[in-house]
Image (cartoon, rainbow, N blue to C red; front, side):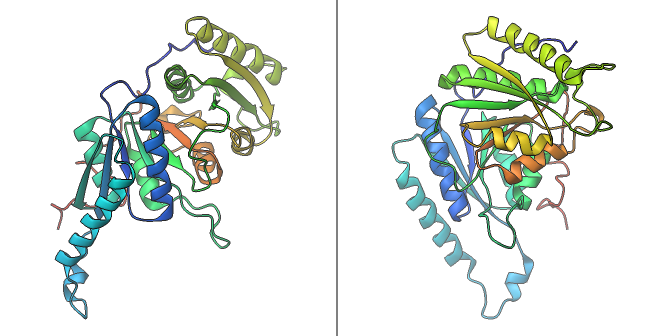
Amino acid sequence: MVKPTDPGSAVPPGKPLVVGVDWTDGSQHALEWAAALARRIDRELELVHASSPWVGLEMAIPPFDYERYRRAVEEAMETWSAKIADVDHASRITEDEPARALLVAAEATDPGMIVLGGHDRSSWMPHHLGSVASKVLHSSQWPVVIVPVQTPIEAPHGRLVVGVDGSESSLEALRWATGFAGLVDSRIYAVCVVPFEPFAERPRLAGVETSDPVGDTMSNLRALTDDLAGRTEVNIESDVLIGDPASRLVNAGDSAELLILGTAGHRESQSNALGATTRSCVTHSSAPVVVVPWAGRGGPTANESVPGCRSNAEG
């Protein structure tokens, strides 16, 4: 039997929302979404724009005018800031790898979450997780929200879908979701998916040995959520679905305010890597996806090795 999880606090008072901005439509939509949430829960925003230093620009023909580029970025930041003038916010512009700049800003502000825009869905690359988002998701010690461009700015139903398989990372996601639901007055729909395939790895909620994985999973999930709901004022509904975990979770989250997931799958020993189900949900979901880091996961700081990034101090 999986141990009940304690209700948590999400986006505590005084913790801002860090938002990555890069002037794309996806980034602008993510900023508008973050601003709407900031108004709703009375939080500040920290806007971060970073451009990767490239020594080749110094040899460009015609020569690259960095000062002109910097002024253009500052003007763009002022324009975007004016759109959210009613929200308390600060902004920072830095010459650094974008993923590393976001993590540096997070370490400096200890945010409630990091908000990033999802890629546009093109006909030739319909489900691509951007490199910046991938690096931040891999290394962040804070919840990361990926906001697809098709997401409504205002939540459609106020329902939070949480993927729960009994792993420590999924329980961390459920704990975070409970705190967030209390903050925004939403309800939780906790879902566990049992794969079709008889030899597929079963969710931990099913137990080690069982002749009825669906029934046992439902019993354990209901006991878990009933215990949590009994200690909070949050409405928690639970359900067990059958099929491919990523596909069923994405479908369940289609009409939700948020789809909330843990970082890793069943094997917490591999928890520094983003789980396959979580990665698939992030790239396919039409709803914003919150990836909640597992407290036992650890992870590099911004000054340590972030995959694919180089520090400015490196040669």
